[in-house]
Amino acid sequence: MTAHSAALTSRARNLVRTGGPKDGSAWLEHVLGWTLVVVIAMFVTQVGWL
Image 1 (tube, rainbow, N blue to C red):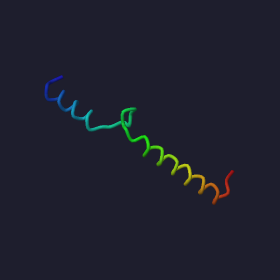
Image 2 (cartoon, rainbow, N blue to C red):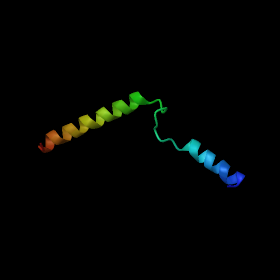
Image 3 (cartoon, one colour):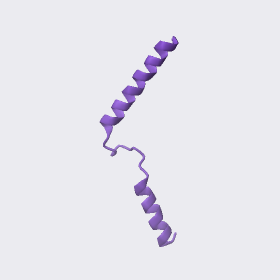
């Protein structure tokens, strides 16, 4: 691996976030998750499934 490709790999790792345990936005993730649950429940209720 050359110094140039090593620098690009390091920069790419810093740019790409995977949402791991150190992400810090747990409250946003919970709010969006529960919003999705409510929207799916409303859709299922309107359609009449289950």
